[in-house]
Length: 216
Length: 230
Image 1 (cartoon, rainbow over the protein chains, first blue to last red):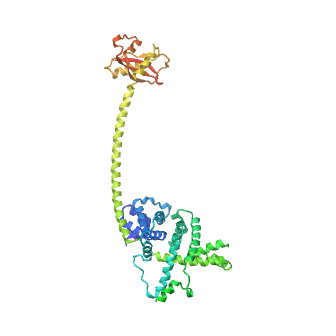
Image 2: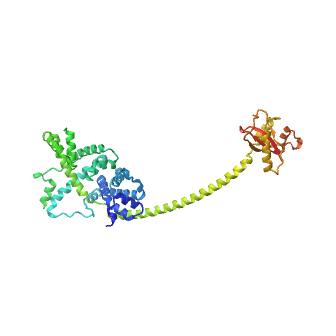
Image 3: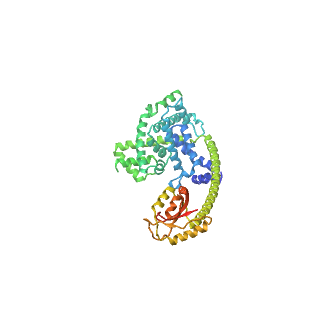
């Protein structure tokens, strides 16, 4: 790793703006994960998430001067750009009905790991893995069902672990607004999850898990 | 602590925000006596765990590797375009500076020429019909223009030595006769017949011919004197 690896995103951006491709690549590697996950969790679509990542970094390539360090960290700026783009994509895509098995392929993609390979599960952990997957699917479904302005605070504050202050900067609203939206979003999520939660079978084990155990 | 405050504390605990121990104890004490807040705490904890499961599931997700390659290509192309733009901007700036210098030089030369010409006279062309009306409306004048017209005659004689001119004949009717500090000399064309008003003999057959004349205009734009040029 070169000394550039220790540079902050802002310093890397400034080098990239001067034409340093290696600095740009390092900056991309540092920040693309967060932007990608944010877009994926907001849209539930791998295609949209890829498009958003591309658009966000194209903004840096085309016009890095749009970023003003006085207004916050580079990461917040990128999330802001990503947010605007993902909302446009969601708005655009609501006008079209998915063709083919898009939903199934999206769910399959979401189950894949970082390198696109299905997670390897030890045989003894199959039931735990099933519970975990069921929870992931249920929570993701509940999050995606939230209105966009509640979903974004849940994604930023709960899933991305952002502070209220940073989330407010990304969304462009007051910290109090983030706090109250998150409060309301959690209420809505709890209500949705109560509905989506599977009926428990014997000893509180989900019915789906019992069925799998029976087969085993 | 009311229910709303307690629930805020529970949300903060569920989000692992590092809530003050005393506040946490107070909130839990409240929940023991408040079924609504107790249920809220249970739901918050479950929701926090569920969200954590989803966050952990997505934590390692990254954009596909091909995106980095595509963006690096865009970066190189953008860089080349920026270099081209910069070179063009430099060239444009140089060209603009050269053009400005040329324009400034031209303007300065013109200004010097115009200024030197303005010292001797200011010549414009007034429509002949308008000037004819001025001449016809004037009569024998006694305006005190002697000194000024003498100066003008001197300039004109020096500049237009090849032209034959009459003396200036002042207009007097309805015109301010105060001495002039600044005046404009204009060249006009008049029917020769107009010369008869100033005592020149004009043959009838040549009365319709056009002759040149210089008219002195005062600062107020009114004609003050006229002379004929051949």
